[in-house]
Each structure stands twice: as C-alpha cells, then as structure tokens.
Image (cartoon, rainbow, N blue to C red; front, side, top):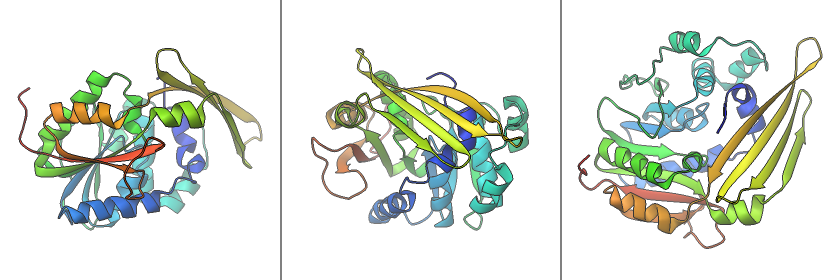
Length: 291
C-alpha cells in the first residue's frame, strides 16, 4: 500500500457517507452488551477518521483509536473536537495541512506513544499513531474493535496472526474481539475487475480494481478535488488487500490464544456463508500466550 490514506484522508468520510455506520454500531453495541461489556475501555484498530470510535464514545465507552495514518488521525481529532457537521465546514476540502511531524505535535501524538483515556463524558478519545501489527497500550482493555475491513490491508497471514496475539495480550480476561473482514468471494465475484466512478459537486473519484496473480486485490483510486480558485487537484493512491476465509482466521486466532470464535454474515447477526461478502468475527481472550 503506497501512501495510503494520505491526501485521500481529506475526503474519506465525505465519500464514504454511504457506509451504514449506525447499523454497524448498533450490532457492535449488541455484541458488547451480550458479553456484559456496557462500559470501560475499548480500543479500535484501524480507526481511520473515527466514525465508529465517536459512536462508541458517545455510548459511554472510554475509547482508544489506533491508526497508522497521521492524516486520518488528524481528521479523527478534528471531528471529535468540533463535531461532525462543524468539522466538515472547517475542513472544506482544503488542500493545505501541516506535515506529519507538525500534525503529531498538534494532536499530541507520537510514534509508539502509549497511554489510556481519561474517564469523561463519553467524548474523551485517545488517538494513537500506531501500526496495528505492533500496537502497544498502557494496560488491558475490555474489548478490541476493528471495522471497515482494516484487517484486509494486512496481506501477510503471519502478520495477521501477530495482530491476534497482541489483541489477546491486551484484552482483559475473557475480553472480546469484534472484527470484520472481506472474503475472497467478495474480491473475486463482486469487485472483480470493476471500475467504479462517482462524481459529486466538488469531488470526483475513479476506483479501479485488479485481481493479481499473487492472490492480492489491488485498488487504484484517483480523486479530483475542487480548489478555492475553481481548478481541480488530482491525487492518486494505490491500495492492496487480501481476502481471508473464516477457516484461515480461525486457525490464526486459535494459535494466538483466542477462543469461542464465531462468524456472522456481516452485521446481520446471521451465520456466515460461502457467499458472505463481509464477515464479522468475534472471539474471546482465554489466557495469555508466551511471546
């Protein structure tokens, strides 16, 4: 993945407004409640601009949002501090943003920074600039959430296993993992080699898909964004993902020490099937594995 979610972070939530975050949130809260998790600290891996992090925070959980993109976290903080509507106006699809180092200082982020959120009114969120393959926390958390197929960006199964090991390490005893992922069926039968184009008043996007021989799925995203002077700026990003089967992830999760692994057809609550495009996986901590 080359420069993923850099400039694209500016328009990410704007273009992703068709994602049913509210529906997903209700299912996640249902799973948390079913497992007796009604409050406490939750970490979200690959939190992006914080769409799900903010919803869980508003529900009363003390949230830690973890992402490897400074640009995505910059907007996550802006949305959290200003509120979604005001942040949209403030961003205004502007071009100029501080560099990574200045952004980190402004947000109070440092590479590898550890900590935990202060208890508050449900709006206090700690954002950490960390790679989920090597994330570190101050202590354990009641649950770990990972949405929007973030795990599919980890294309090496061994590294996915390391994520599971870290999740198991940082979960409270019998803590819960809730994670969604896209399947090989989705990439091979739904996206395939499709080209998707979307044109809005001030932004246009072209999303090209390619099935590679090495089993990976590559996406080439081109965005045209209107500038204040009426001209358009073009920027491009290449994304790479791998589809995973429930069997693959079950093996990796069990090796990491996770138990009670269940797979659902997306956020419907129904059992996953061979034609599931997005699968939600839940698992519980059951003792720590040696490093």
